[in-house]
Amino acid sequence: MPIKLTYKLTNAKLKKAVQRANEILATEDLPRVINTRATPFDESEPSTLPASAVADYLKNSQLSLTVCHYTNPKSSIGGMFTTTTPKRIHANRKAVPIRHYCNLARMLVHEAIHALSYNIREASFSHCSGHSPSTHSGTAPYWIQNALKPLCPGVRDDDLIEVELLDNAASLRGRNIRCG
Image (spheres, rainbow, N blue to C red):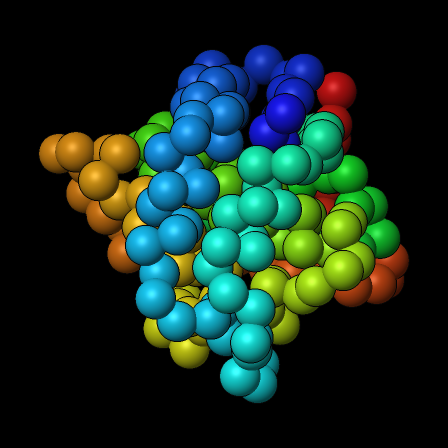
């Protein structure tokens, strides 16, 4: 059973993005795409974790995640995962209106990969917070998000949507989080 995203709020575009992200996460093509990577996924330091291990973790996952809204004033930040709420991923209210639903779906998959990495605890294939897509393009979340571009034909790429990875509750203050 693949990772499953649940969204209980009313934003129609985000609802469509969650549906598309679930389709992507459920397809057998996603592990195949991941397995095309010839080198291990990098983290902050070089990693020896092969792409096939990430694909296997994804295929065998039974992780259920709730998609929540949060507010970051920077509309370039599309989403967030935080270790203080490891069964939730968050979409930035400021980014949703200006992004295509398919690029939002790619961002949700990115956040789901963070959640998978954190929740399995056997291996780490995430990346540190505060880094742009260009500095962490070799990590599993960004590499997979980038590899999904062909699933959004004719859609402006938006480059890679920046994301946040937060690891303490204080970071959540003032973020106006709603999950339903």
